[in-house]
Image 1: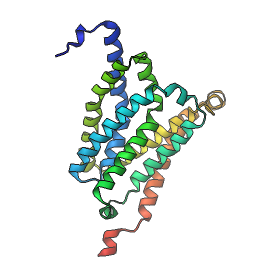
Image 2: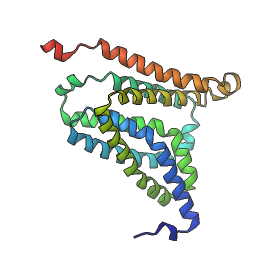
Image 3: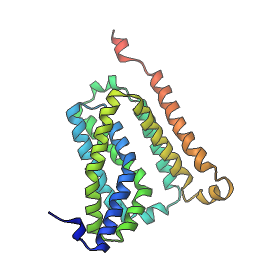
Image 4: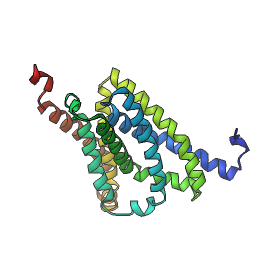
Length: 233
């Protein structure tokens, strides 16, 4: 069994940094995974969590090596923020009663796609810290992120159980996606200099505004949907 303390300092310190960064940043990912998987049958929930988490980690490794160039592209974060707002609204607007018409396999595939797309968008900022800690060491990056997989899976599974008991967590999770989307928008290369120079308060106003917008629109759209159960009664 590998003894972490026997590793060279120049390897151990960055490894611990990568693990720490991913522990801190895994909360958002666990929320997305749990929200996207919550409407699946229990046995498919587990598969969606495992496959979605594993694929998201692999994607993050690849993204880390291209993060610097991606983050310097103007309007990329703005587009990503709009996507996150859309995901949050759709998660609140999901019609669970109507999902019985969808084949389970397709439904699980859709959940995994949502997990991957949301993780891709939310990882644009996160991967910079991981890439900086790894200092170009691919082995170090894989080990550090690999250790993080159980943390994300455990977090998502715990949230799924809590959502069954406390449905309000779904609303909180959707609001979190809106908040993260708002944060991304004001830090986009195309507008960040103007925001920092002329209206720094937008760093606080926009995230909370986007969180409120997601919840309001999601609830409003869900309320307008016909209730299948009532229609069939």
